[in-house]
Amino acid sequence: MGLFSSMIISAEALRVFEKALTVTQNNVSNAQTPGYARQRALFEAMPLDTDMGLPGGVRFGAVQSARDQYAEQAVRQQTGRHAELEQRQAELERLEPLFDARGEAGIPGALNRLFQGFSAWSVAPNNAVARGAVIERARYMAAAFVETAQGLMQSSVAADQQIRNGVDAINNLARTLKDLNTQQRHDFRSASDPAIDAQVNNTLEQLAEYVDFTTLKQADGSLTVLLGGQTALVIGDRQFEISADTSSTQAVLRDAENRDITAQFSGGRLGALLEIKNTTIPSFSADLNRLAAGLADRVNAVLAAGVDSNGWPGAALFAYNSTDAAAATLRVTSILPEELAAATPDAPGGNGNALQLTQLADSPEIDGTSFMEYYGTLARQVGRALETTREDQQTQEQMLLQTEAFRSQISGVSLDEEAALLIEFQRSYQASARLVSILDQLTEETINLAR
Image (cartoon, rainbow, N blue to C red):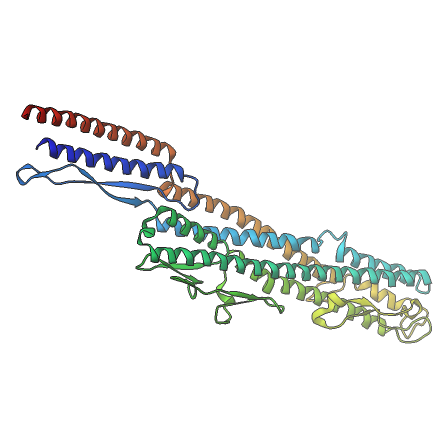
């Protein structure tokens, strides 16, 4: 093999190690870049056969990404589940203070005070102060129901706003993916650009926080994104925006053609918000309305069966607009103290009716439970839901950390490893440069000798 062939081989080696150094330096620079996957320079041995004039050597093959799609998908799944539980926990923490389980404040405190008022009235059935206290405590209890119902409504309104914000975030991320697809379609070099690859995967990971989706890689390098595996969000350079309709009691998500796709959102933050808005809050509201209506109707029925201080049938103490809005509209009527029916018709002036009202505190009135027990069951449901979500969220956080660590082992940048490669490639480059220098001197001396 001649000097000129050796010179060519050595010069090519210089270019190879220069490119390898660039790849390694790029890894170091992007070690903390979200979505970045480690790149590796691949070398190819050139054929060596002196008889056939093949001098051998090395050439730069390609840059290979260490990204593992299985690991990426695992991280996205765990990210979506973690975000879903985190959002659900935040919403339940907003609801929990509305349902006091200790019996000292809110509805349970007001119920206790009302029945205590009935008890005190039964001791002095014709006492004006005792009668007035009953009406005042009834107002306090009605206000407690209204306050709790309003708290549920406010939580529902807040969920509406967060659902709209989530839809906006999804559309913005979809727009980013569409732009990246367009860039890849118009510039084939973008398909192998690690910066573009990092942007795509970081965007997909952000999208996984909000919604479950599937991706399909197209021949041109672009991605197709399907929400819930069904509804197109991005296809190539086209985006299909979704929208949120929160004008009624149930939030509805619609695709670009205005079709209802709410059922496809079962994970991520948006899935949690839809569950809270469309299922959890309506369920708690229905139970609260049932309690308010049941209590008001039962008290009114007992009063109607008795007689007041003038011997007239008892007037109603409570009123509400409808059974599905009983808690929010519960109020005390314009009843006067003397219109409260303390006595039974067969014993005017007595306390028979007031005693029956007192006994309502412990009597099975709703599903075989007392009013207080029914409320306690509702409050415990809220508490258990929150506690279970907290436990699940803590477990999920560990699972997410594990999948992220697994991905990092496969495709993450190790600065120690990159530092070792930098030294290796620098020394290889220096050795090649030294060989080029020696060959250059030999060539020059050979030419001088020939002269």
